[in-house]
Image (cartoon, rainbow, N blue to C red; front, side, top):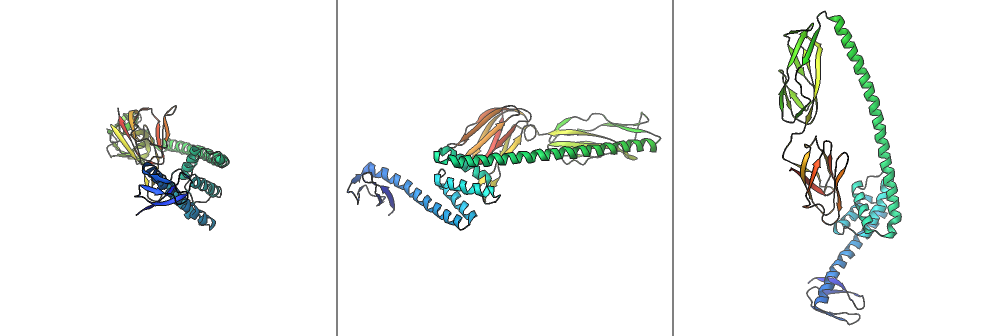
Length: 365
């Protein structure tokens, strides 16, 4: 026998009744309830039972937080929000404690999960939450500003190091030219005849060259060599592209390695009829993490039918090009399941998917 709580519609008293009964009498006011009224009250009672359980768990979380068992307190609230995604009290506590945790630079919460609950709080749209929302907005603005400053600093340092590297490379090049001209009476030169600017992953090409001695063609042994890892090059100059990136190689005279000719080839993604990109799954957080893929690097530009496979009802997906946003959706009810869309990806466009999405498939139209 299962007892469920129901609320009397006459006096508002909470009763515990056998879920098999078709007729009951209120112990407090004597009201009789039958048939459909009972069924309706049972459904409301089961919802009430869930609410009661969530309130108990929230109280346990408060005690943990008071005892400075912060990690356990956050996990308890996350457990509540798994069973009741929009539990107002649990969301407010998580955000209030989480904001304090983030401001103290602690590591007890996941920032992405914090943002997820923050968006749910805005959906609830309770005026009493306005103060907390303003505080969170202020923290997010400060955090983003700090990230931007750090990125600008890194960019400046990168420019400085690049300038120094270019300067040193130029000085070394000048030294090599001067040394080569003074040390050898015979002047050798190497010419690469037919190196392409681009090739796709999996392609093979043959590099042809010529060697000149005092501007006269001659037969001399050469060596092909490269430090790049996204292609292989054989002793006779056959290149096989293995991964996306910039492949640099040199042809050097065997008798004198100072006589050399270097160039590079841009290796792009092979053009398939379809692509499937899967998100990584975290057992610790019991969810899928997002990812970003680029047209021209991870897949070829073109027109595709985009299919997104979320794993729950909370899914956020954006698809961008360098100049225009083609698609943006935040759907709390149905996610993106089955909502395929035709999209034209230009060179340099990218796909970004976030928390809750299992995979995304592109099928060339």
